[in-house]
Amino acid sequence: MRRKGIMMEKNVKKSVAGQRGMVGSAIVRELERQGYTNIVTRTHKELNLCRQDAVEAFFAEEKPEYVFLAAAKVGGIVANQNALADFMWFNMTLEMNVILARKTQRQFLKRQRKTFSGFFKTETVCPTLFRFSRLF
Image (cartoon, rainbow, N blue to C red):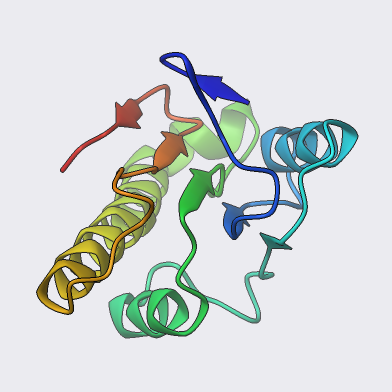
């Protein structure tokens, strides 16, 4: 996968959140099709992205170099109309938890004088149509 002319290394650790959904499963399939390995996934039962402490623990343990965020709470038209604020809160909370944990992980590694190949490699793909790239 290319990003601004830089090739993502095939064997570095990648995390895909939301891998059971339509977008996340497509990301995993495409990564595997292109020969990428070391893809880390967690189900909602294994990792609740709305719990900051759980997300930080995941990042501390796994230390992924790339993060694909396709996780979201979704519903049909009626569910979205009836609980719009709930869906927005849930999705914004999990997105911010992942972004903050990634930022914290990067700052810690800088203090330890460790690097991610000298380049911050987070790509976030959000179903809410926000795209964050190279945030920090």
